[in-house]
Length: 195
Length: 195
DNA sequence: AGGCTGCGTTCGTCAAACCGAACACACACC
DNA sequence: GGTGTGTGTTCGGTTTGACGAACGCAGCCT
Image (cartoon, protein in one colour):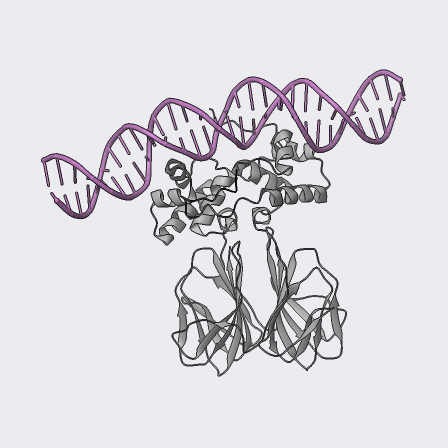
């Protein structure tokens, strides 16, 4: 078929990682110590269906996939998001510093969640005086902030919390929120988690 | 059709959150500022299909779903994992401190990933003198460490890295790794990400 | 007005995913 | 050995999801 390029459609890009899914399916089933027959029975799918899926063939319906996830107690994400480990160091003066309206607020992205994504990790440096207000991000985002040094008012704009070093706060990022340094050289870690 | 209940199958448990998926689909399309027709065209699916999906009907095939995710630039996880926001504060002296062999090493769990899980967030406090060596966790775990204060040797046991305040390192957690404070009152944030 | 181009929805048709049964194989038990 | 129960695979038949065309509607231009 000559490796056809999707000329018309723009995207069409990444095909569904059926092999990967099949592998996970097999592995998780083994981990649970269940037979294909048993899993199929519990999930309420024909074992023929499961058999084909585990051999990497087919194009399962969401219902089928979901039933299997529930049965195997696997978050659907694990089936679809492929894993990839590695080692990476970013020095204090490194990191892609994000554009910031205020000069006394710096955010360095340390770990951007690659496509197939979940969380970004930022290092924040802020000086007192200016309030860093963030507009709501997309729904489902949760932000975690751990204050490393200094002092800051953090959290939902509606109900900010004053943090001292070591304090931790988590709040929904899809609501207006802020970060205001109360002392010089206030530093924090921000984890933005897009579920 | 009589709303037949799958009496035989044991599970039948959590149904597929089609309404939620539909909502996300609609919302993300709006966010991208694209028409239903356009998205359907780019994704290579019939617009009738997309229309039905966006109205919460149907049971899409993985291929279809995937194509839409790619087109809308949405990690499949976002479609399937339901969101749940909330606010939570943990003070510096709070948090469930984990049992630790060494007295000069403390780890407080700040945010345990709930079932359907992805990441745990810890606050580390360590004093110099003892090396905190961790046995490998399960495969696919990635640990992120950001040093808040002090100085530490962190990372894979095979190739540790010396971190100063603000430095960041990420490494696979399924290999032997360590955390060794080099200065008094060394503090860090540890994010354990189980993919 | 009239025609046109975009939108999103609804309607038949066809291919394919799902199912159940039949199958080949392995192992334990009588 | 024969029989039984387990495994995972392959085979027709049926349900159903995806497709394309037709539809109703709104805005815009001639």
